[in-house]
Image (tube, rainbow, N blue to C red; front, side):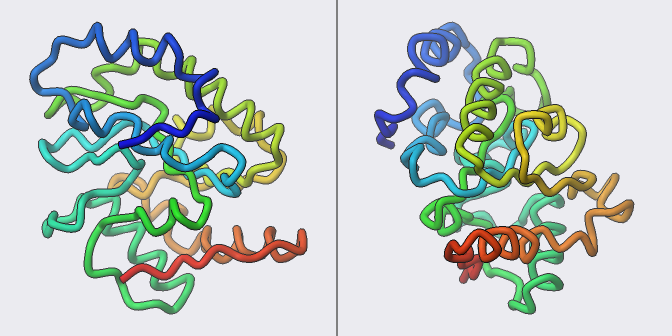
Length: 206
């Protein structure tokens, strides 16, 4: 993992101090993956999809919000719902793996509000200081006119930072039927980009 230097002012020293202070052997994602989202240079970010915190299932989180590695076959329920909406929205077949790194290469930042948690304990690290860091990042992205995709109440706390944003309930099974399905977030993003005269995101996954 290589953190792009454009994120230095947001991460140093606080983010590294937070991670160093966590003595949890059941940390997720693995320490070497915590900052994976920041391999994408800041000036290449066109869209940000904001999640709550990493998947709490051991071995699932890989540092990109909502993403899992390609070797994970039993996809998290939220990701299954994202893929259902992706297929309905874009008329693509549902992807065969949960690896969303291809979106990152298109300029989509996959950012969790908290960058870590404890295996089996969602939200365990919500008060460690990660949110202050991701708030500052969201403010910067909004000032750069990045389009925000905000799923659920935790992500929507950042709505005031963004002029262009797409909001709905979270894709979890507890809420997806209350407005996530049918929200067409992927095509909405591309409509905004095309309206600006920019290239749309190629959302196609394998």
